[in-house]
Image (cartoon, rainbow, N blue to C red):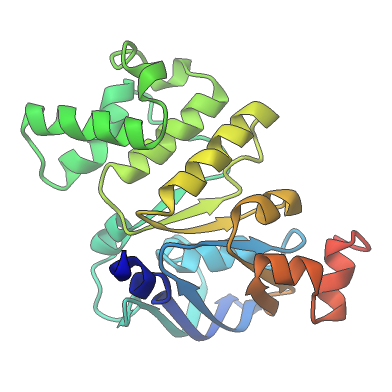
Length: 258
């Protein structure tokens, strides 16, 4: 038990003075933040305030955007991800789940086995084991165990999103980034994904962008409020929602704007 206590207060990510430009537009302005291991950190704020952009800097998804320039540091376990780190290795360690479920147009099994195969796992027995374990960890094994050969595109939206979470888990990441993972889903599927996220934080560090402030209060340990590319306030979730220190945070969470 002792180990967990030490683990729980270690920073998984340390971001220092991060600025991000798309050509001349400054999308992130001097962002500094510590993201604690094995906790759920939620990013909130109005549309276009930089939360998804910031999320994508944590596994270098912005690299593919033309004219994108980044200054400052993003340290993962004290190693600068914009230094010599291999991007493929980084994305194995830091998985991503998008707003709209995006299963590959192949079977349920092949969706999960895809990542491990790319990273060199060949043995059928090993792949079978990874597929089952990932689907179990994504709380969807029982629903899909008889449908592994079926196309992933035949699943419901909520199932597809849990499949995408299972796919992210299959390569054994350390961090899972989630960009509004429930915004396209109905309330029942949303609730299943929230339960799942709470379950996963025992083994993973989770960062979630959400438009839904109730969701942030239900599942996150820490909440970070973004506005116009800046972090206005970052605190333990209960505290940020019950006693915001900045007037702009208060205005946002009480619905005066956004």
